[in-house]
Image (cartoon, rainbow, N blue to C red):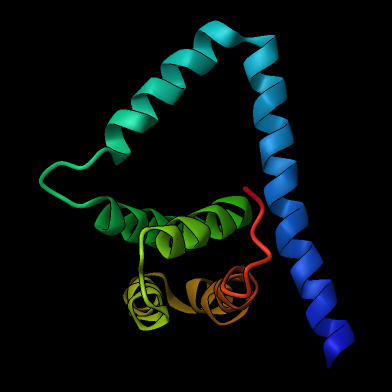
Length: 126
C-alpha cells in the first residue's frame, strides 16, 4: 500500500508541476494574452459576494463535471488552501456527481480523494 500511495502522491505533485511549467511557457510565448487571462481569472476569484472558498468549491465542481484532471487537482488544492474541510469538498463533488452522473463520480472517488490525501500531508507544491 505505501508504494501505491507514493505513486499517487507523485502523480498529483507531477500534475501540479506540469501545469505550472505549461503556464510559464504560455506566459513566455504570448505574454499579452497571458496577462489578460491572468487578470480576468484573478478578478473572477477575488472575494466578492461569494468568498474565495466558495469560488474554489464551484471551480472544483465544474472541473469534475468537465473531466479536467489538471483543474481537479489545482482546485482541490485551492479548496484546501482556502480552508475547506474534506467534508465540504466531498459534499461539493457529491452535488457535482448528482448532476454529472457516473463520470463525475468516478473522478470524485479517485482523483479528488487522492489529491486531498496527498495535499493534506504537507507535501504541497507551491
